[in-house]
Image (cartoon, rainbow, N blue to C red; front, top):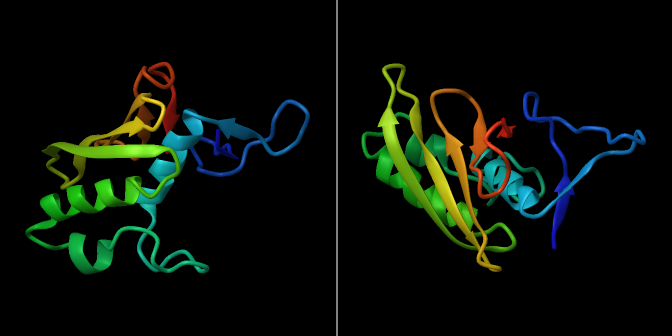
Length: 138
């Protein structure tokens, strides 16, 4: 099972555990958090692997075809995360302020299904199949 450094849901920064050490998250939360991180990255932003991330500047932002391109790019990027077998990006609406809302539906290699919501707030949320409904990833 993969693990990842636990990020604070409001600041997307590292969190300390009860002993003062850097907190670690395990699957399925780790997979959901890593997927949320993967789709937030602008392609070229990661210094050590500039191929990671979505081509927001080249193909998505300010483009008329951006919804289908975004959906396809999100699904492809989500599948690069370890343990993600399949990913489906469901877009639900475009707000008046031009924010896209929707959910990334993941199926892990062990059959676990997760949903990562995005949209009208700046938060990524996990559905109840991974955590309870109050858990949020920013």
